[in-house]
Length: 408
Image 1 (cartoon, one colour):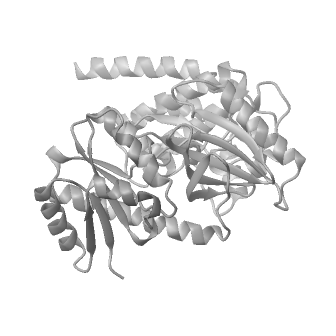
Image 2 (image 1 turned 45 degrees about the vertical axis):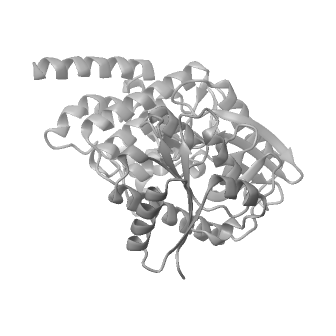
Image 3 (image 1 turned 60 degrees about the vertical axis):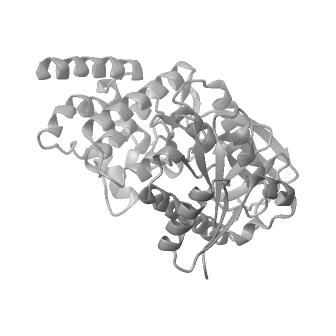
């Protein structure tokens, strides 16, 4: 099957250039060019499902130029949208991505390699969307005010979708609880509502924004910030520079400081719950296992928690406080540095046993300098562990000062 591309662009020379590079990438491709006057008349009846990619030539200096992105994405089966921009800056690019664009390409910097990479990424995104829809095995939910684009993830209790918020005119993550599921009871719905309330009550630059909770027929949903950069789990599939690991450690610690000061414990800190923004900053999500400090421990803690990042006291079924989150952060920092968690095993039981009894694996030089924080976070006994996120941040400040002095 040939690849079909719709390009809405006025400049004839750029049209020729685009046609050349698209045909070079996909010899059997078909590229259809339209002007903005033509497309405005046809948009209502345009069948978007026949295209693999849409490219929009826009004057990014115009205040309302990007508003066409949500208009296209509202169309049923709309493929990924690439922006070919005159003018604009990094903030414009970030805004375009938040509104749903797959990529933002400044015309003045456009090269063949840049275009090819963007096109390949967009087509891969479309294929992934189709595969995920099949994997989901059920029709997309219909929730007023949101246009569901594709599924992102599914857990035991809920599904997460990429959606376009019609009121915000930007992409959001829509977490949906189907109350008809066999595992879903009133307690599950109450936990879902509690997750929303906790998320709303915690405000900070490294905590995901939560927008709305609602119940529609048999569906409950939470709308929250969408992260096009994916999660830390995906990021760790590639090696990370130590200074980047420390930067992420600091941001996660700042998030935990806000969460703990608000009186909550995250309870399930893991790479899959640490999201990456387009600007490189991180934000924590998923407060489904969170509880108030000093409150009763969540039910089925070991089952619901993630063994690779589970503190020894939680593994023993004891009530954990903020230091349980810090232990999980230590395990994550170790994994960021070398690509493997500190404790592993063939089963959850083996992993839990390692957390209880095995010593912290030692890192070789030059990474051994980070044991000053790893040893404090991964201490088996919480009373000997770094006591708070604030204490960790002070230790990181001292370490930064040490590195400056060493370099000088």
